[in-house]
Length: 329
Ligand SMILES: NC(=O)c1ccc[n+]([C@@H]2O[C@H](COP(=O)([O-])OP(=O)(O)OC[C@H]3O[C@@H](n4cnc5c(N)ncnc54)[C@H](OP(=O)(O)O)[C@@H]3O)[C@@H](O)[C@H]2O)c1
Image 1 (cartoon, rainbow, N blue to C red):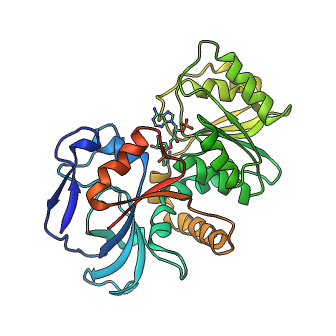
Image 2: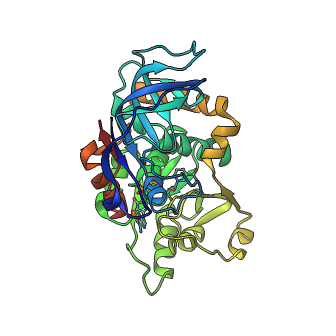
Image 3: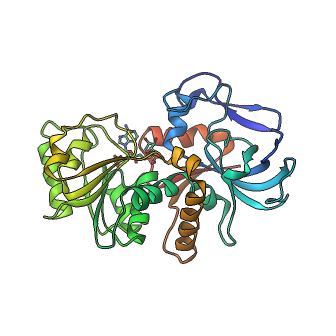
């Protein structure tokens, strides 16, 4: 089978399309013929050896896939050959076949395409966990989403809106925040793409955009210099969600949460799923319900074939994506 493999640490240009043996499913595993693989920022971190989970080389990046069950391991009764399934696999998705633990697979609902099913896992389930379980978002609360045009961002915009939040989308270009507004944000602001000399102006822009009460919840998958500007617009009793660091790991003055009686909440969806997979399954069912009702769209804006999978990851590295990128196999 064809696989887009990482043989040494580096950028997307280091990936090579090669022939590899088809993986054989073991006990509690199924083999999936991959039709679509969602691309996420951690795919870039993984091939650069910058992700918190290290995978032995060589490996293919790609953490979320959808396809058809092509073979089942011994003792499997929940899945059968020919079924349409989505699977969360960590790595391996940029290949024609994967094996996946059945605990990480789900049957794709009727009417959902392979590409939508692939990308509705990593970022959407993270956003749901962050906003419901961790932030306990209530209807009517104001949610400021940084990087709102990106993967976690656009998922958070839609999950927050479906939970009844008033969403303010923040992003580095008008195009990205317009995209977020088309997906449910009711207000927006554009921040500079690099740290300006006077960061207080950006803090003031954020405060002005969320309104005088401040943001009850701030979703931050970006980090860097933006985090401090954003936390200054936290409402009394607000919750600040630490999700990711595409712009670097920030340091924050701790007087800011003190002044607001605020909570800083770390989000680790990967360990949540490992420890509470039944709860995550319930989140996925809710996401699928919103999808079937037309209240949630995965927001795919770019598709690539497997042979151009490196380009898909490069788009994220170049900060060029509004929405989601998928590789079709
Ligand atoms: N905690 C968890 O459980 C969890 C789960 C999933 C993902 N994550 C993390 O969430 C973060 C976002 O992942 P994603 O897949 O949503 O990524 P993404 O689609 O690439 O979106 C990230 C956004 O970050 C902003 N950004 C700022 N500086 C950037 C830079 N130098 N390079 C690239 N983007 C930059 C961009 O928005 P603007 O241009 O508008 O600023 C971009 O749209 C990653 O750090 C990922 O590891 C965490």
